[in-house]
Length: 524
Image (tube, rainbow, N blue to C red; front, side, top):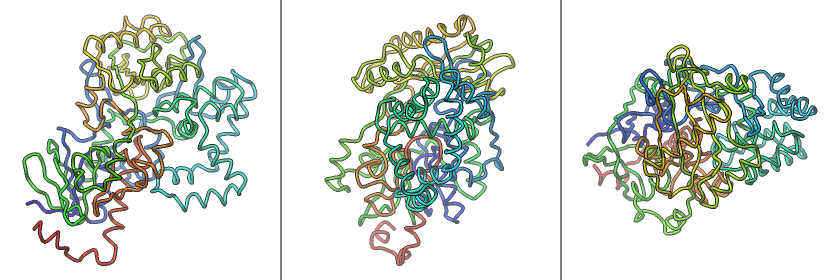
């Protein structure tokens, strides 16, 4: 029987953040990863063609660049280097107009001002407000729930009336929030498009805060990418962990969490080997996977088992990677300077797209999020070429044969061709991944869901992942949920992992923790 202080199930970025923080505290850490490589959704490989590095899932990391959890690890000392495109984000309208989120506030203000002159000054005003509340908002969003201290600081900074207005803002749909602040379509499209980085359309309650947060972060820290591919962020996390004595075992799936006396005492892997966890077990897996498959319903309260039936996943995903012989020939050249591009819909079109998904229909007009990776990081492909990806969402539960998937990829290409004539003539390689392929790469992307559960307000805060389980602690003592199903949810920021690590440390420091329990003695 192996013996460690903590077992972390899953070597996604959240699991690795948790492992690093616990190793920093002197704990003996073992990370068990089911697949053949660490990283989960933070990984890269040559997909579309040799020498073209593609990010397999996530790609641009504004939250990582601002996250206290990741910043505290000082990953630059372990080989991580950030790169930026000349422009942060461009949104291309169906009629060919575009708005650009630029690195400098003045340039962005000029771009949104082309849609309504008053919006230039409004943009400066909005960003000034962001800078006033930035640190406390990020702390409130990313720290364990309830975030009492940052909320109190915000209340003191803003005063009662403005604090209530901020609280109201958190409930607004993205379209309504933007229209209260801006007159033109440009700024509204930026907010609504960024909101659709989740599974929330522009008219869903609570979508506004996601759009506002990502847009303001883009203006603040940009949308950076790791030099050499997303996998380099994972590599830095692994290097840091191993330098502190931690271990990552890949190709070692955990099949069960060992529970006795209401406590998590260790894990059993697929080979039947048992690992004793003297202090804690942390799980960087979706909540339904942890509770149903690894713990088992026999160890759970009946109410929790019933609540699991009402866990809502986010939409499925289709992703296409291309290797191009040259840059995308956009009709609007400014779009070619953006690392991230939103394409295929105006705000009404995004609402139609979201409604199709809600109704279980494959959208006729896909809204695309795409990355021009060589534009952001020249190491991603040979000089003069471009590595590009795009993804869109489709309803869960649909069957995607290979032929159907390829036909849908052709539809996506046509959207490119409409706004960048000659796009297809540059394609030297293409890789198409549907929901099944994404889940095969990373089992936590269940049916191609990339957010580990909906971002809708009914499954956020105290309701994430289930009502009453808004913290990393679970109903099993010494077992902590460290994945994106936990508060605050999806995105590469490491907060669920950091919150779980801190909860485990706090549990360990409780009076009487070091007493050997009957259950531990039984396992020994």
